[in-house]
Structure formats: C-alpha cells, structure tokens
Image (cartoon, rainbow, N blue to C red; front, side, top):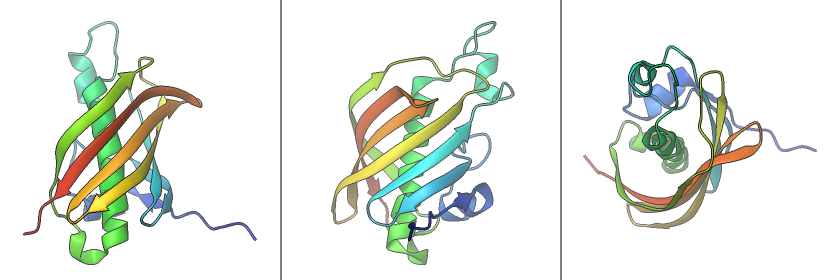
Amino acid sequence: MAEEKTIIDVQRIMEMIPHRYPFVMVDRIIDLKVDDSAVGLKNVSVNEPFFEGHFPGHPVMPGVLIVESMAQTAAVLVVQTMGPDAEGKLVYFMSVDECRFRKPVVPGDQLHVHVTKERRRGNVWKFRGVAKVDGQTVAEAVYAAMILDG
C-alpha cells in the first residue's frame, strides 16, 4: 500500500509560520515526512513584486528568495514535527553554506523545494535544500536555523 502524502495549503502554512504577503515564498507543501523532509511548491508569477526591480525587462527570481523558500519549507517541517506549540514562532538563519545557483528562475516556473533535515540539537536545526524547476536543480544550500522560544 502506497504511503499517503501530507499536503499543506497556503492558508495552513500562514497559520504555521509568521510570514505574510509579499514574503510568503511557499504556496503549498506537496509532501512532508515528519522529522525528516518536505517538498514545497512556489508558483513563480510575473506579478511577484520583486520582478519590478530584478530585473526590468529580464525578470529573474533573486537567489536569496530561493534560499528563503527553502527556509520557509523547512520551517513548516519544523512546526509539523514539533506540534502546535511551535506555530508562529520565529526562525532565524544562523548560517548558509555550500550555496550554489545553477540556473535562473523566471516567471512561469514552478519551483519545487526539497528540504531534508540533517540534524537537530536543541532549538538549532540543520537542513539541506535543493530547489528544482522541471526536475533540474536550480539552487542548493546547506543551512542552519534557530527556533526562538517566546
């Protein structure tokens, strides 16, 4: 029997993490394995506010926002793993390592963000993220984040 996928829509994502428009960088979680991994989906629209200045006439999603989509996908994984008491808590980047950008992300792309937990020590979590468009890796990074209590 096939394992059922955990799918989380944007309304539920906004209950789980504190980000709001225009800074929600994940539209849906399309697969999640508690305490292990998650796959987030970001539909990249020409209407994104950052395209106005990045770059006029040649819109490209900023790399830092691709990394942010990895972080938000990981934050949903953290909340799903830790339970309701973790909802809405702030998560701060501590480090971003091994970050590589392979191909531009442009309007019309669907960004699939694959994050895997590498380890957890107390309130510090480390993840590996790979962002893909049409199955091709467009960005990757290893990053650590701290979840703040209170």
